[in-house]
Length: 68
Image (cartoon, rainbow, N blue to C red; front, side, top):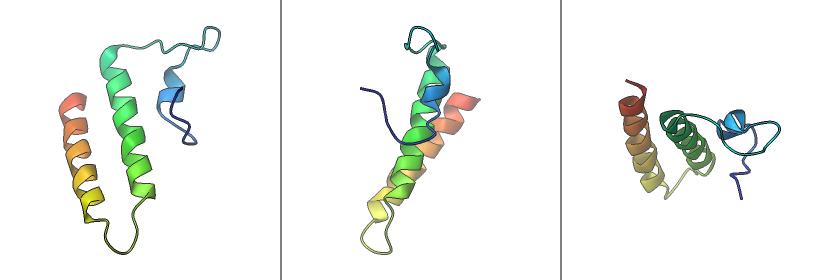
């Protein structure tokens, strides 16, 4: 099952007729990481979510590596 968060980056890579993901590997990785960052950001609360900030930072660093 695909990631179901609204307005995902991965949905843009799904072939309209076949329903499968049709894109180069690096584009798929970038789309998935962007979706994960958005999902984690949506889970941030005023308290006790410092680990989420760490996860976001790690994923954003990886994203910059892939986009070079």
